[in-house]
Length: 149
Image 1 (cartoon, rainbow, N blue to C red):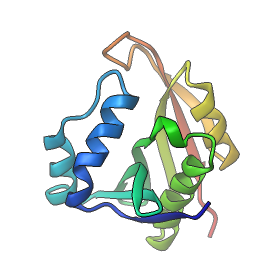
Image 2: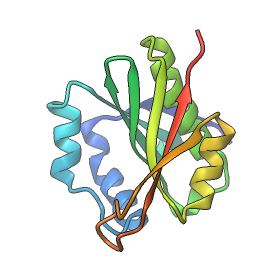
Image 3: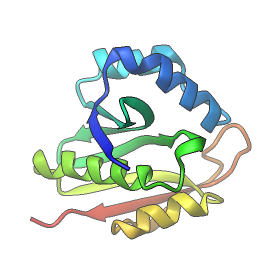
Image 4: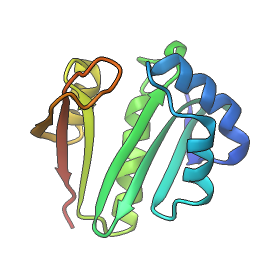
């Protein structure tokens, strides 16, 4: 199965919102994504496509020499096919291309699938943000990855 990674466009937002609402208990608003794409100069977003159909997306803020992953989501019907891997690889490549030296993210303590994915790409657990998630007060695990030059 050919998974294409490309830059997110505003025309993708209807599909992005569908994935967002089906994935997260507290989804981002369409306005938030629009602001990320049009106003936030630090933000970069990518999508994963299979047969010209958006099946996932990921975002990152590039702040000085660090990349902060904001979100990654894969349509439930396309999980387990390597889409998440390709999105993480795409975000890492964005950082390499811009001489970013480290990447970070927060992930729910209970999200073992995501933590395992990030660990596969060299992210390590470095701390906890207590009660980070407002929907259920779950802690976030802070993960970091160094990017060698």
